[in-house]
Image (cartoon, rainbow, N blue to C red):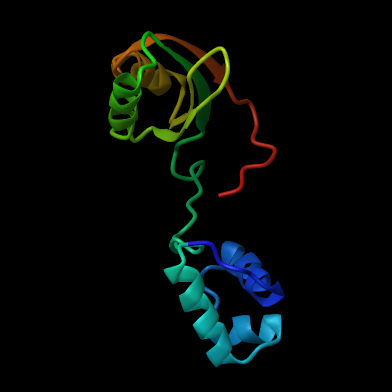
Length: 150
C-alpha cells in the first residue's frame, strides 16, 4: 500500500524514528498539530506499514558484543532453491545482525556481531561455513563504527 505523505506525515516520521516513545501530546506540539489528528495520522502510518513497530535500541558494546565483522559469502549454487535454503538457514544464526543479497563478485554480505575474535571464529567455522551452498567466505573486521544508525 502506497500512501501520499504530506509535510506533517514526514515530520511525524522524523520524530518517531529517533524518539519512538514520545507521548502523542508532545509529538503533536512538536509538529504543530493537535493530539487527535496526530493519533489518526500515526494509526494510518502504522496500518499502511510505513511504521512497522517500536523497539528499544540496545548498546551492543555495553552488552559485551564489541566485535563486528562483515562477511562476504560466495555460494556454490545460485538457483532459487539454493538461495531460499541459504536465506532460511541464515535467519537461525543470532550473531548475524544483517544479511544482504549483493550484486557483486560474491552473493551475500553479512554483518556479524560477537564478543571477540575467538567467538567470531567459532561462529564462522561452525555456523556460517556450514550454511547451505557456501563455497567461500571472506571477512572484513570493523575497527570503528563512524556511523551506525539503528
